[in-house]
Image (cartoon, rainbow, N blue to C red; front, side, top):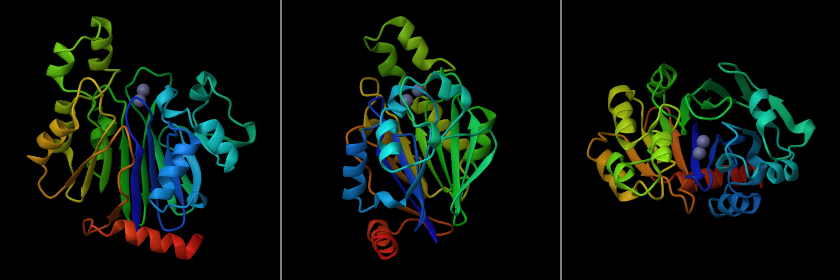
Length: 276
Ligand SMILES: [Zn+2]
Ligand SMILES: [Zn+2]
């Protein structure tokens, strides 16, 4: 058994990460439109009927814009902390709202989702780990620095969506106003390539088969640069750079053996058998 994961979009224009087994799946954030989510899942042969819940990391627009429509259309429970809910500028159907607390484990079918607090300039931001089939996947974006929670959980993951938001030099030399540069690089902003690489090198566990670099800045980073600096040090971990324009392939995360390249076929056939 395995978990199947993909980034449907990643960046300041929208974040939406899919994690599921052969029956059930959750979205971590829904920051692209319902229509785009449907289109991208269809291209990946992931049926919408697999979706069972949406978990919300924080209230910034790039993580929530798709929630009202997609949750209503597919009757999906929205797991969100009370403080984040109160700060949302979008409507969510009352009967779909479910609250969660840090360190509480929530079961969705055979998936277990656990949230923990992160450092970011939002009212009550959380990161998540999703566990199932003996596999643990981390979703760690929008983090000012690698706190103890992050390093602890990172070391236990088989796959991680990890923020690599900006290159220090590009941010420093770029034309963003001074206060914005400080916000991005501050402890409640975003993780730089250097910080992400340091976390990877110091805390990767021996089971880490996939590292999906996420939430890259359009102006202060470059996918080629991120790919190069991580691949130089990747070892046996497969490096993927998530795009702000399209979905990644579906990756099959297995307990012991790394992705064999046929994940898309595997997940498609399993889900078609069970759900179509
Ligand atoms: Zn964001
Ligand atoms: Zn944010």
